Structure formats: C-alpha cells, structure tokens
Image (cartoon, rainbow, N blue to C red; front, side):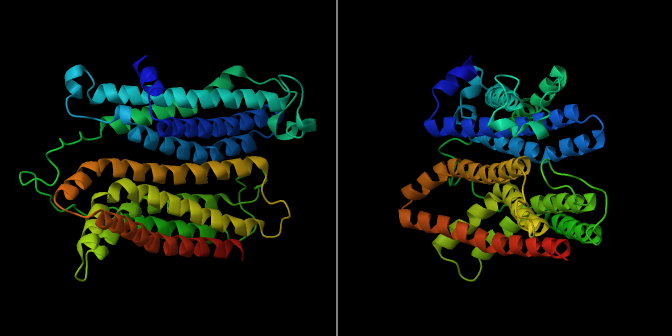
Length: 389
C-alpha cells in the first residue's frame, strides 16, 4: 500500500518513466509469447524455437537495466537522512523499489498477453486479415503455465535487480557535508576494468571475423527474418558488448583527466572532476550504448540487398534494445544530476556563477561525445567488414 500511495503522489516525469518501463516490459513479453506461439505451432522445429527464445534475452536484459535505472532515480526510494528512524532504512527502501518495479512490469506483461491473444484471434477473431497468424501460432492451443512463466520473467528479474541495486546504494550525505573543510574531496581512483574491457572487445571482434569467414555455420535466427547469421558472430558481439561495458568507466575517467590537463580553468576543472566522480555510474551505460549502436550499424551489412530486410519481431527487438539502453543512459545521467544538487548549491554559495556550471555541463557532454562517437564508428566498421565481405 505504501508503494501504491507513493506512486499516486509521484511527479508526472517519474510516472512517465514508470510508464516507459511498462511499455518495455510489454514489448519483451510479446516477444517471449511469440516464441511460445511459434513453438506451439511448429512442434517439429524445437531447436529453432529455443534459439528464438535465446534471442529474447537481449531485449530482456536491456529492459531490466532500464527498470533498475528508473528505480534508482525514483525520489520515493532515495535514501535520506533520518528515514531510518521512521522505519525506512535501506532494506525497506529496496522493498519499495522492488514493489514499484513489479507493479510497472506486471502491467506491461498483462498488456502483452492481451495484445498477443488479440493478434492470435483468441479473443474476437484474427485481426489484420490474419497477417500475424503465421509467426504467432494461431489456431494451436497455448500452454497457460508456460505463458505465465515467460510473462513472469521480466517482473521477477527486474524486481530482484532493483532491490539489490538500491540496497547496495550508499546513503546520501547531509546537506552540510559537501565541499566542507571537515570532509575534503579526495581523488577518485581510476576504474580497473579498462584493460580487461579492451581485451574482451578485441577478442569479440576477432571471434566475429573468424566466424563470418564462410557463408555457412550454425544458424542462430532472430525472431523474424534473420536466419543465416553464424552463432560465432553473435558470440563475438556479446564479448564486444561486455568488453565495452567494462571499459566504459575507464574511458569516462580518462575523459575527466584529459579535461583537467594543460592549465585548465574553473569550468574544465569542475567538468573533469565530475566525470571522474561519475565514471562508474555513467560509464557502463555509455559502453553498452556504444556496443548496441555499433552492433546495429554492423547488422545493416546483413541486409544490404533485401527490399524488406527486417521482420516485425526483429524490428521490435531492435527498438527495445536501442530504446532501453539509451533511456538507461539518460536516466543514469538524471540520477547523477540529482546527486550533484547539493554540490551545485554549495558552489553557488561560494560565489560560482551559473554560467560556469553550464559550461562544465557542455564540456562533459562534448568530451564524452568526442571519446565514444569515433569509438562506436570504428567498432561498427570493424564488425561490418567481415560481414559484408
């Protein structure tokens, strides 16, 4: 009940983020149910159905990441001084976050079920002249336990991940602590995952190049029309994505150090220090977005000659992955901005002009763009080169 009351009194932007989580959950639920419908309608193609189900893990992971990012930025679950005295400690706040996430994702799963049954014709006949019947297994009985199990994947996974993420979050310091003499700012150590991330990304590119040498290979079909990609190419992309996620914090920290080099002014010093402080928070989402965008660019090499390259389910999965990873990055940036409110207020009390803060924000955005945009383009070209050959 407390979670529902907090949801009713939330800011419209907070409700909009939760609605986006519901939409993402609905999309993933529809993909999972489509895989189940394909398996029910084509019992002889069990291997293909399992591979389609494995493909759904990518948008599932992106949706869970987005749900966790939204839970972390929810004002009702942010730790504050004195909340433990009224029974709202880290454990209780993590439970509230889990319940709020479960409500949003369950709503999306129910919408996915209704839409799926409608397209199958189980409610009022086949819509769209039965155009969706082929890949949804219309006319075959749908196993209810399996459908409910698949629909529960997103709510359960997202709720558990949100609870764990919020329980491990440190308590926000009191308003008088930032920039005080008693609590001096100490240098932030550089993240240690950059060498391993670079190594994994390079290994992933090597695996992609090796696996795409021939036109054969084991098929690993996407839900839709992609049915000839070797499994090694996809395994290589996964390695590359993990490597970029590990290297992202180190690259962000490096951007902060470069901003503070060569006689920096106040704006560059502030921008570089903030990037170093937030390298772990925004670096991983940046690395994941970089991997997703480079993979999307490289994937177009597989469809250069087709007049209708993407099937509906493939397009839905791509939109979910791109949208959720981008939204997770933006949400992480919002969380970082919320944590900088006290620091910004302290700087203004010390006489810092508002233009300096705006210049620091612009410098941070520009430096990250200059670091990650060329990296994304280079990785996309390297990944697409063997595929288009």
